[in-house]
Length: 205
Ligand code: GDP
Image (cartoon, rainbow, N blue to C red; front, side, top):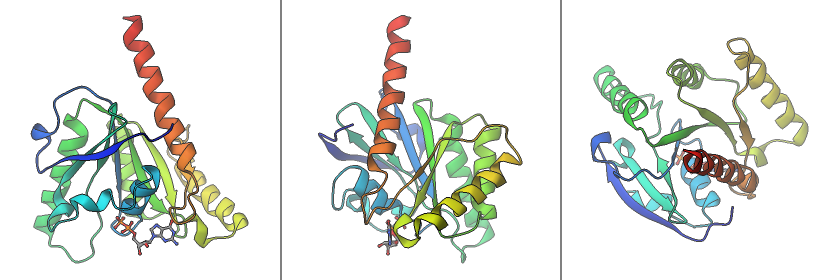
């Protein structure tokens, strides 16, 4: 997919206020500092698109961007801050589960994980939550430039082995590096193919 346009649309604190039309939507989520903003900028060929909503409080907002006038890229808050109270953790969880369970337009989530680290409980639990709620998702490994190819292969295999303990099938996954521009085509082509499938299904009805 070629990116012809990418624009910030709106930030929301509630899923009910998100854009009302039925364009397909893809949500990006992961631990804070995983490289989400950098990935969004890399995918969209923009230097600071993800930062345009970067005002205080952005961490608690659902940020919609419209791409090529035909799909939404959604930047969700990063999870896993070490120093937040239990009450704000609960509030955050509710906010996120509301989005995933209520947003009809959501086609797929992408869970971002730093390729350098072993599978972390917080990410695995989140994927389990998505799986249990039948919310389609893919995994995006970030910061691949930090590892040699052989280590990338090993880390990806470790992750897949862990997931296959729960599930028979692996979700689609992508190895990316925002600083080296790796994985852009793969992620965008996956989104394009999925959008085409949705169109075909619509036309058949
Ligand atoms: P976010 O908090 O998930 O939005 O993460 P950011 O995109 O702000 O990135 C967090 C840190 O990781 C920053 O210091 C980035 O420069 C760095 N970073 C992000 N993506 C990459 C990458 O692909 N390669 C490397 N080496 N560093 C990255």
